Image 1 (cartoon, rainbow, N blue to C red):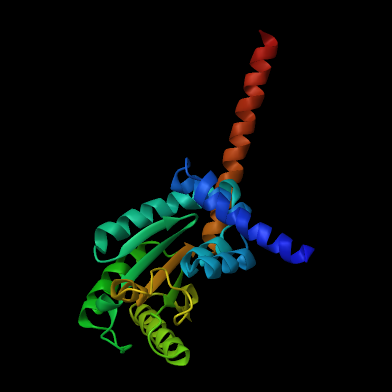
Image 2 (spheres, rainbow, N blue to C red):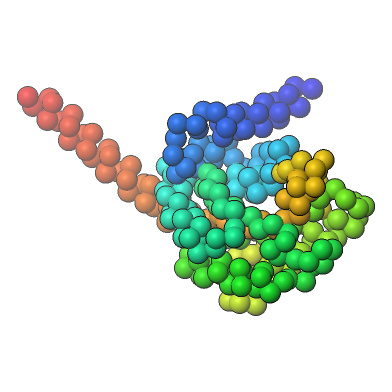
Length: 243
């Protein structure tokens, strides 16, 4: 029982940090806080509990600390470029990553996993930005509404995630950067009780996070910044002592 209570305390703490204590921080600073309680286990638990699997993936990949803040600043710039270049996407900056959400009517016909002509042109716009920032990983997530059987929805979501991910691969995005996951009906972000909510739940999300090279570079930049700050503090202390 104590182990279960501790587990939920960790999850609740991470959620609280994201939604409450970070409210006065900018998006880059949130990366440092989220990463401090991160890890794949906590990220996955939060994603499942909130229905926001993109958020869970970002928390799971976070490094936290000042390095996380450095990554957050890089993600700020990339997110703004995606917003300008891909107007049909819903783009959000979360912690150390970015979520790019496309509704089903942009990507696929009803009950189909074949990309529409609109999807082709939209993904081309996204690929333009992804190529500018090669030190990122992309997780492609497929989702459905609750209509139909669990098995059918799971298969459809996996097929749609694969179709979108394969388009990226076929148009120059390295396979090593891409993962794909289908969640079926298990992670609704919107109410399935309404037609509008069900339509929004039929979605594909691209979760963009730092790869190992970006993380290493951010850590090096963080260490350099820390060293500079320490030198400045020592210099100030010495000046005060000499006065």
